[in-house]
Image (tube, rainbow over all chains, first blue to last red; front, side):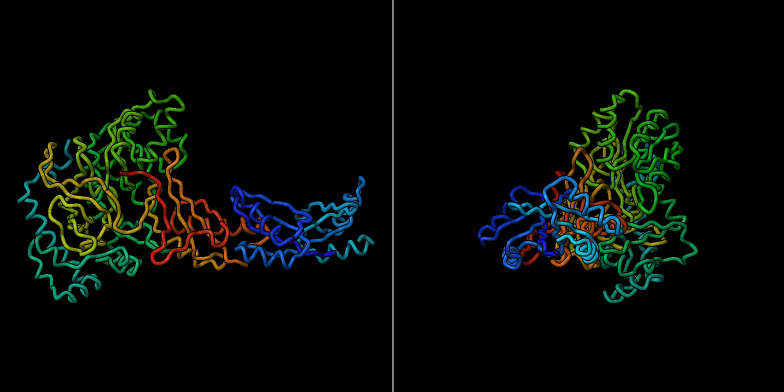
Length: 131
Length: 432
């Protein structure tokens, strides 16, 4: 399914990531998964959180540059080959992945996938009977 | 050695006469041929008949860099376009450059000035002069080139860049003179040291200009390169390098007053200041016909010394440039105005108008860093898009200003806003 990922622009300076996590923890928001993409001067902190609206409001209020990006959350059982299956399926439809990361919570194992054509990815995944 | 003793050593009385005679002619020429000068003199209640000697110069209105922009590209030219044989351009205060046009006579006078400088440094026939100033619109390369040709020296026109080739040719051809910015010379010196080539070069002198430098840099250049390091001064609006230069005494930069008449004014009031006082340098070109400049405000702050120099020249000596009366920066020899950066940012909708420029000198090379902010909605998740925006800004700045900045996209609101006049620049280099 498509879910909303929060992207926060961060300069590469000591303590910047901690500012973000503090804003969220002060609001009682749980970070369920994250991924930091880094470049020479800046990074983009990508977050999947328990309450997207509250997190966006809190981060905006604290003056951060935030945006929402639709990403695909796909069931990816904890066994060899399951991620390969998903990626090969997307590739066979000519869909490329921009980036991805893992979401593991107890027994739940999901892959978070970002693609330019997220709607098409969702169709292919659902069509293959994957949740 | 003196290139033109008749002029360079003429008595102050004779010089005064020559300056008066030339001023009368050039004022008449600009009044007759350039609408801006005519309108301004009319507005001041002046006609060319009111200008009888050099003393009358302070009656005339000033000319500024803004005028060169407003009358872009050639409305300040005072001759038909068919008389122009050369153009150069330098950066203006915004996106538009300023253009200078020269007649054959102007180019000849310019090289006369540069020839005087090079001769004062001890150069002549038999010397091989490496010109590492950029060739092109910038006046440095061709200006030094023409002067070196005029004195009968051999020119090695390496232009700027490609350091390893520069050093190889300097060594293999036994160059005896080097013309470039002092910071590039220091960079070359350190490379030579690293490669252990210090003893393989035959340099005797260096002609350094286009950016401010200090006595400490002189000492460093002289010891590292085993040369005498001399200042050369000039600006595109007045001609180019060779408006003045130091002599063997290294005690001030002689200005070629028979061609370029200097004044020092109070930058706030425009009033001429007494001899020796520090203020803004103003030039009137006394023998330049393509684009004459009447009382052009250089914005360079310095002082003038009219006492007789031990070298025998009678021409006035200018002290070191101590700063600017505007916000122009000179970075790697290139003029940079913060307002240029601002006007480029305003052209690109994704960027805010906020910026902060940091200039420093690392390993003798000027660094040029600009912090910028995006408009809120353009802080995207996509790193490649952020890089594209950054590269677009770099490309625009390179094409307008001529040097490449390091652009840093920073978080929104992180550039300090201030009430009143915002501080947009920190120059960490030490020139004093």
